[in-house]
Every structure is written in C-alpha cells, then in structure tokens.
Image 1 (cartoon, rainbow, N blue to C red):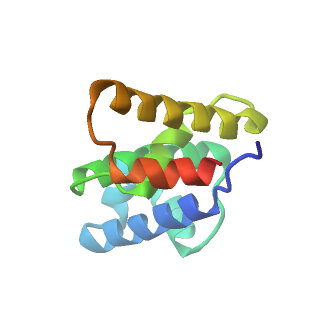
Image 2 (image 1 turned 120 degrees about the vertical axis):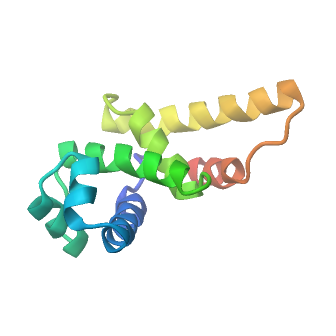
Length: 126
C-alpha cells in the first residue's frame, strides 16, 4: 500500500493556521505551535515545512480542530499521522488502514454508530 498523500493535510493545516492568525495573532499561534513567528509566517505563505515542523503543526492542528467543536476528516487524518509517526513511510498507509479497520470493528462489536469520518477515511485507505 502506498504512503498517504500529505498535501491535503498540509493545506488543511495551512488554512487553519491562517484562520487562527486572523483570530488572534501570529505570535500567539506561533507560541501554541512551538515554532518561531517567522517560520509560521513562511508556512502560512506557502512554504513546505520540514518534517519536524510538520509534526508540530500536525499536533497543533489536531488540538485546534478538537477545540473548534469536533473532528473533521482532516483533523482525524492529522491524528492518524501522529499515531503512525516513527513508522517507515512505506508502512504508514497499512498502519492507518489497520487502525481504521480496528475502530470500525470496535463500533460493530459494541453496537455503536461509527463517526462519519470513519467511512471517508476507510475509503481513502483502500
């Protein structure tokens, strides 16, 4: 299974960063992400982040989205990136599929309704 394409996630994070900067300030968001204001400004302007910076941004984004009132497909995707961090790039797609399948099985086992994002992300993983 191929590694997931990170571009949609990066663009979702970039959009969230821009919104957060408009709502507060560049310095406040940079502090929350744990990066320099100039680095965040460059990211918001469109530069591609280094892997360590992307990990920080992804962690911030997962928290930001959950505090914003729920979990979108993009926010869960960012959480999955965090959960599979450290695995070889070639195995992350498979690991993501296994995690999503296990969540689906748990909902079936407990007779609960899976969240809407689960079907969308399972379809992407196939």
